[in-house]
Amino acid sequence: MSVTLTQEVIDVINSKDTAKVLATIDKDGRVNVAFKGSLHYEDGLLVVNELLETSQTNKNLTYSLWFDKEVAAVFHGPGAAEYQIKGIPRKVLIEGPIYEKAYIAAQERNSDNDLAGVWYIEPTEFRNLTLPVRIAEQKEKYPIIGHLDKDVNPEYYK
Amino acid sequence: MATKIENWREKELSIEEVFDKYKEIPKIVILKTDVHRRGYILSEKAQKLFNEGDYQSQADTIFGKKEGENKIPIGLIFRDGTSLVGGYLTNYGIRDPYVIDEIDGKFYLTDNGKVYEEVDFWREPDFYRKKTSKGTPMGEVVNVRPQRLNVAISRVCHFWDKPGEGCKYCNVGINGIDSVKHGIPDLFDYDEVAEAVAEAVKQKGRFAMIMVTTGSILTGEHIFDDEVDEIIKAFEKLKPIFKTHDLKVQLIASAYDKEQLKRLKEATGIIGYTSDIEVLNKDLFNWICPGKAAHVGYDEWKKRIFDAVEIFGEGNVNSGIVGGVELAQPNGFKTEEEALEKYLAEAEDFAKHGVPIAYIVWGVCGIFHNQVVPSLDYYVALAKGLNEINDKYNLKSYFDDYRRCGNHPNTDIGRIYW
Ligand code: SF4
Image 1 (tube, rainbow over the protein chains, first blue to last red):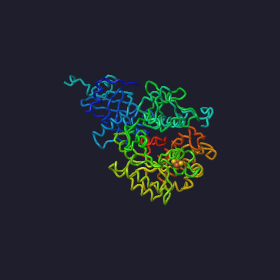
Image 2: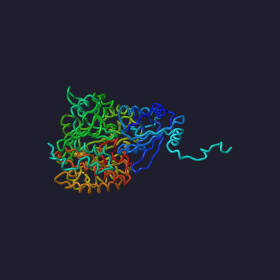
Image 3: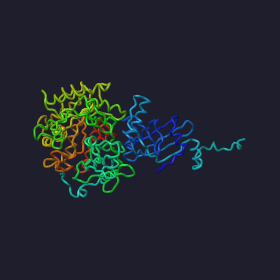
Image 4: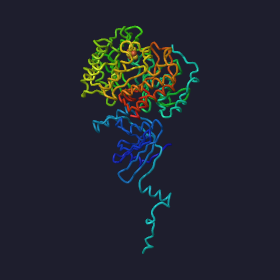
């Protein structure tokens, strides 16, 4: 399943001012959520640098790569923009030039940092979760949902 | 000459059937295990691409390669970071090997025309072609895996000194004796080793661990005293490279007594210790590893590994086996079912004492060069069983995992359990 993202969305995903969260599941189906500032979009894939070998995220990404399970990332931009991307981890680099470059960058941020791997996630689904967009969508698709007081005619009460 | 199994595909489960049977085991690990079991070769196109790349190849071809000669790969890496150590022509002639082909500029593992997985080869590290102050190429002094440096102390295993005492699946003895005959010294030059290590670790992010190993040295007041002395001598050169006392080092060596273990830990700062029991059955150990049996004995070897947990701590000690030799004939188990049952029971005894077992896929050579390796079904069941035991006893051995070693299907699986 290929997912095409607009430049506007990519800019939010790749902005350093965006809050980025990655949700994964373990082999028993338990959920884990973690902030992942390194999440970004590159050549059609989500990329995340996982610093810790023993982190639950690192184990869960491995599990998802092995068994074709989805993970989900959410991005909350500086404005109201909020996006969710689901995807399946397809590859992790644990050595080689790209890995070493990411390792050096991680160390430059904090000399204590290590790097477990550079993970590549193939997007399977995109959702725009920006609140005004979601409200409009819901109104359109499910006109029966919502509270009555918002629909009253103020003229009636005059 | 290997013993060919005629029509082997009809006699055992195919890899697809094994994928289906073991749905909880990752396909990549099953595939890696099978490639190790059957070996691989390169198609002409893949060989050309490999020759052109900056890949690590067997030392003799790196340094003495003639124009037009093909380079020989020494390891693969999969897209989940799992390594395959060796594998090229391993067990060649018993079954058909996998073929690595080139498709759109990338390498793929194929079998019988079916494409399985994209793979890559190990890259040469920056230090490899540099020379020590004595002029030796550093890649001849210290060799590497994707994230690990391999340091050797002695080229010779002295269990081979007495004819018939070397382990039957091993060719270290034959190679070691051969190189000494050609005037190469028995022991490595620790100054050169330290120079190579110091140069290697300048490459940021390239190495996560040093594995130090040695052929067994039996002499000393107590057996292995001289071996321990040599290791300590080597660490006198290696330790100043690092600022910490405890070192990210796995030592794979003989089974030492408590005094030797304490002396070693104190003097070297080694974190991980492995002593390979090799065969998880006393009678078969006596047959397959006659030197170890005669000089130390199965029960004592085992006890020494258990004692090491007290000194190095749980999670820092393990023991390796050569998976499959238990089915060597005429004395080995007669069925894979029996082998699995007996092996897992014995592995559980190790686990109860805080020692996880890690197995490697047997590549036939040495005295056992005419034997055949078991089915993929067996190897996957063994990996699954060992992983379940380690999980049950909450045993983690990060020092021997997919990144720091890469040669054990069961610790490959362990990475999501720890
Ligand atoms: S102890 Fe056995 S397996 Fe190890 S090097 Fe010596 S002969 Fe080979």
